[in-house]
Amino acid sequence: MKKVLLSTVFLLACCLGYAQDNVEMAFSLRSSGKIYAVVLVVLTIFIGIAVYLVALDRKISNLEKNKT
Image (cartoon, rainbow, N blue to C red; front, side, top):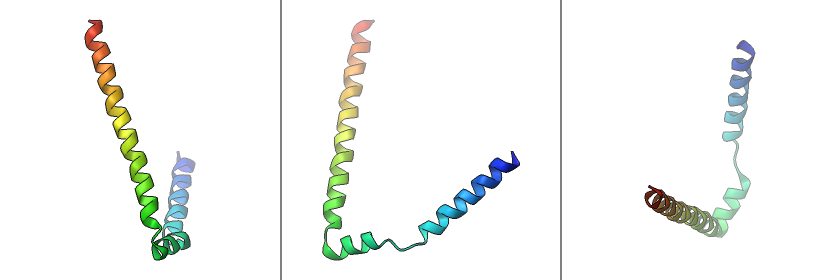
């Protein structure tokens, strides 16, 4: 148990160290205005997944209702 806890602490410390580092790609995308294109693509993907899940849930609910 002690090894697992120590490993987790070291892993979190490592991740926090990387979180403090500057991301050069984000600065270059933001300065050139391309960050908006990236945000738009990610948002489109998330909206598509949400619409798909809602449609799938409706189909499953309909099947469950018709089965009984």
